[in-house]
Image (cartoon, rainbow, N blue to C red; front, top):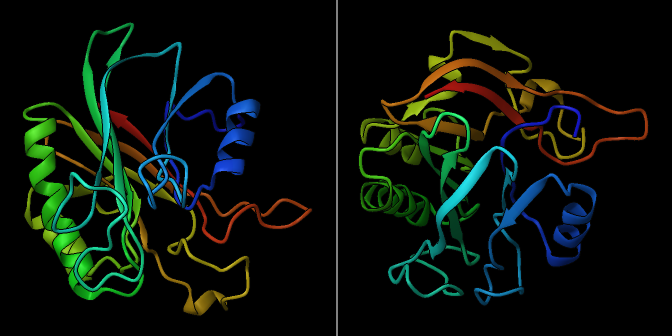
Length: 225
């Protein structure tokens, strides 16, 4: 509510947390399904957007596996079921459209991370076409990791390395502050295609007095379509 982003990609959201977020953030519409059954079971990769800013044109979910149309299956060598939640949104003021994809790559499966990156690139071509496209997610890999390299070589630009202004910590995962600062790594990224300019990028390292709100620091960008 303080930073008031227009679009939010969340990871590791379970049903009771999703219900709580929806109740506390009535200005947003929430999209997504549980990764374990395509309904309400397991973690969501919820996509929230400001209801008064955007009109929802299309949305859906697909699995990160050899059978993306079936949600609830572990792909390749993954330890968990993994999914992508996506939406095509129309700006109510400008009339411009944008395609947003939100995901969480597997933390164990090296093959799964590589193949997930390839699959997302294919799906962006199918779903977004020539539209401005954004991917938000926890990629469980650093900036020089294979899945991140596949995405950038596939035409997606990493917001933290292409923004006109960059601010905040150079890491995102801190395990509720338990990881020493010098060992923290940036594994949460926002990627955009060539139709999007990254004006500002920030990793938000805020720590409220009552403790961390998450085990990751959120990434915030200002984009120009």
